[in-house]
View 1 (cartoon, rainbow, N blue to C red):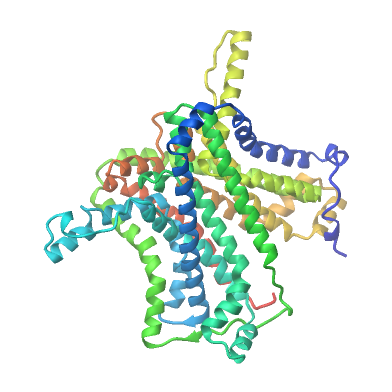
View 2 (cartoon, one colour):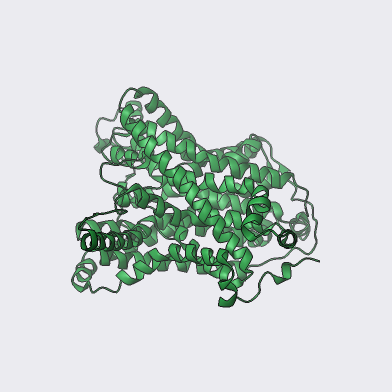
Length: 560
């Protein structure tokens, strides 16, 4: 008999006294919550003069641009992601087998890198406008109109191109799981293909689409590189402005608290929408939706529509960056190698630490058999839903307090000043990366541990093995693929992370992301191409993992 029913027993301090694994999980959760608590504490400071200045000048511009950015990204990611998912699920057309997984590729491109490339190609001195002037004989910018890429519209376009795969991935999974009978019954009742889509398929997929849009919006409010490069002042950019230009960490924390509240609101709306739109299968097995073959113009139109976001979001940047990198291999090679060493070293350390923390947290939740403990663990993963700039502010202050306390003690007792031990070091960066990305490792490993029957733990305990030995001898071999997946995901996200690195990096310390940012901000995209290309190629790893998962799930028979 399965013991799964006992997996939600009451959470008590008496149990905790005899279970160091649960205590360890609680300590990890407490550490992960420290940045949020710090933001709350700092936000209590009185900054009336600064806020009066902000309210009179730029604050409402921050709010308006943030809302416009979110609305624009939500609209275009839902249209692009849902449309592409429906086309590859419902129809057969040329190149479909390639496009199914290729539509995920723009997810590998950091938005700030795509912003640099598109600006490079579309600005006045770029390839597109040069070609137009040569073709039509125009001499100056006064002879023609061209949209301004460095604008909020440009930021929406760039972010939508790299974030629509979130919606595509989840919407496609929802469409694939829908029973074919429902759609065919709608057609038999006289509804057209389009009506059946809006009346049947879309409502059934709505919860998944909402989750995808929510993920895209989380990334949008976290974005700094694109909005700063396009000169679009948002709340995230405002944190940097208030902190660095107005020298007010507490006012920056107050703006950060607004972003935290916005993130929590998005999570709440996503959860509400998912619960309000639940649909259940009435049978265990059902045939997959039949893919209708297209021919002629419609077939090639479907191919073109799917190719468009791939071309703009992946093929364009990788082509431009490869060309620039090959032309400038002998320039700045030493700087690139130093930045690459720093990036890979930090990413490897962060991947190891984050995976260990996520594993201990997930194992503590498993052993506690408590819903309250699971809720605490979920709170510890909020760092992934919080903008990197906010998390950096929440980490920097406690690190400074710790460093100053140690320095004071060492001076008082041993007359030996230690200075800053953690602040402005690689260790601070690794800690920040781990707290931000612990959600990736925890959720990956928790899902894998959940699939292991509790009878294995009982059998191991009967044979005299303690919890640690059970984890090492039984659980780890079974979840090894998930451990490697978690490490890869954290590694790639660490390689791409920009706001945390900009704020917490040591002096004269560059990673690939900061090197790209520094050079491209100075209009030196060609010199930054090799670093940008390295980040982009690393980002393909999770896309390959997701593509393999999609393929294996679709090959698996329904109901298994």
